[in-house]
Amino acid sequence: MLVLLGIVVVVAGFVARLNPLIVILAAALVTGVLAAVTPGVDARGLLTAGIDTVARFGDAFNDNRYFNITWLVLPVIGLLERAGLQERARDLVTQVRAATAGRLMLIYLVVRQITAALGLTSLGGHPQMVRPLIAPMAEGAAETEHGPLTDKARFRIRGMAAATDNIGLFFGEDIFIAIGSIVLIVGFLEQAGVRVEALHVSLWAIPTAVVAFMVHGARLALFDRQVKKDMAVPDDAPDSADNAEGGR
Amino acid sequence: MITLAHAYLATGLVFAAFSILSLRDPLNPTRFRSALFWGLLALSMLFGDQLGGLGNGLLVIALVGIGASGKLGVGKPATTSREQRQASAERWRNALFVPALLVPLVAVGGTLLAKHTPAGAWLISPVQTTLISLGLGCVVALVAAMVWFRPPVMAPLQEGRRLMDSIGWAALLPQMLASLGAVFLAADVGQVVGDLIAEVIPMTSAFMAVFAYCAGMALFTIIMGNAFAAFPVMTAAIGLPIVVHQFGGDPSIVCAIGMLAGFCGTLMTPMAANFNVVPANLLELPDRNAALNGVIRAQLPTALVMLGANMLLMYFLAFRFGS
Image (cartoon, rainbow over all chains, first blue to last red; front, side):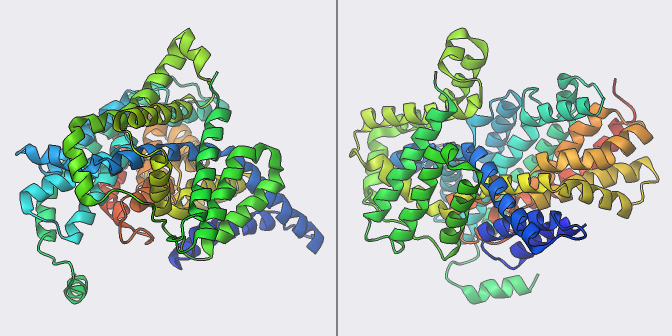
C-alpha cells in the first residue's frame, strides 16, 4: 500500500501546479524508496533503493529517447512558416465560401479517423498537421465568416483543432490490426491463456469509432455557433471576463 | 541500412545546434540555461547508451533542475515579418504545402515499403520503422524546401529553435512519464491499485463489473497518462477474472472496448503530455500550463460521453456476440 504514495505525489503535484518535471522525478523516487520498505530495513538499505531508482529511471529515460525523433520536424515546419505556410493555408481556405471552422474540422475528423483506421497514423499529428495547417485554416475560415477574431474565439478554435486530431486518432487507430494497442491486447490475453484473433479484436473497435464520429461530429457541427458567441467577448476586458466566469 | 541509431544521431545533432545557437543569442533572457538544457538533451541522444543507468539518471536530475528552476526563455532569431510572409505566401502559393505533406507521405511510404518489399527492408531497419521513416521524411522535406525556396543556410535550425523554445521543457514530458511508468511497474503499483478498485466497487452484476472495468481503465489512465499502462492492470484485476470469466463476456469485445474506455481517460489528463500539453504549447494557448488547458477542455465533453457509450456498448455487445 505504501507505494501508492507515489501516485499521491503525482496528483498533489499537479493540483499544486508545481513544475511537472520535478513532480514526476519526486514520484519516482518516493515509489522506488517506499517499495523497499520492509520490517528491519535500515537507512543504508533505503539509500541503496534510492540510487537504484535513479538508475532504473535513467535506463528507462534512455530507452524512451525515440519520442524525441518527432522534434526533427520542427526545422522543416519552422522553415515553411518563415516562407508563409500559415498565411497560404489561411488564404486558401478563405477562397472557399462554404468553409467554416466547424465544417473544416469535421472534414479533418473524417480524414483522420479513416486514415488512422488504415494504419496511416503518422499522416496527422500536432507538429506536422495541426499547427502548420489545420489550426490556421480553421482560423482563416472563421475570420472570413466573422471578421478579425477575438482572443477567446482564436484559442477556442486552436484547442478544438488539437482535440479533433486526438479524437480522430484514438477512435480510428484501433480498427487497424497492427497498431500497438491491438498487439498489446492479443499479447496480454495470450499470457493469460486466452487466445483471440487480432482481426476480431480490431473489428470490435468499429462500434465505438462510429459513436465517436457521431458525438464529436455533432459538436463540430454546432461549433460555429460557439465561435460566434466567443466573438462577443472583447479582448482587453479582464473585468467583464471575471463577471462572466462568476455568473456561471 | 538506416537504423534507430541514425535517427538518434540526427536528432542529437539538431539539439546540439539549438544549444550552440541559444548560447550565441543575446536576446534570449535565459540563454545559458537554455543552452545547457538542449546541450544535455543532445548528450543524451548522442551518447545515452554509453552513460549507463546511473549516468542517465544523473543527467535527468540535471535536466529537471534546469527545467524547473524557472521559465526557459524564448530565443529571438532573425525571421521574416508578417508582410514578408504574406508576400512569400502569394509568391510560392501551393508549393508551400509540398514539403509539409512530404513528411507524412515519406513516413507512411517508408513504413509500408520496409514491411512489404525487400528493397525497403534493406533500406530501413525493422525496429521502430515508423519513427525512422518519420525522421527520414523530415530530412527529405527539409532538403526539398531548401532547394526550392532557397532560404539562408542557417534558417531551418534557427526557425526550429524558435519552435523548440516555444515548447520548452514540456518537450521532455512524454519521455519522463514513460520512465515513471517503468518505476511504477517495477514497484508493482498497478496490482495494488487494481485490487483496491476491486474492493471498493461491489461487482454483483454484469453491469456493475462492466462499469467498474471501464471506469477503472479511464481513472487509472488519467493518473498514469497512458491507457497502455492501465490496460494490463485493470484487465488482470477486473476485466478478465470478473467480466470475462465470471459473467461470460467475450474477451475480444471486452478488451477492445476496455482499451477505448482507457483512451477516454487519455483525453482528460495533463499526464498524457504528448497529446494534451505539447499541442497546447505548440499552439501557444495562454492556459497551456493549467491542469485543464484549452485542449483538454475541448476534449472533455466528447470524452465523457464516449466513456458512457463504451460502457453501454460493452454491456450490450460482450454478452451477446463473440466467438
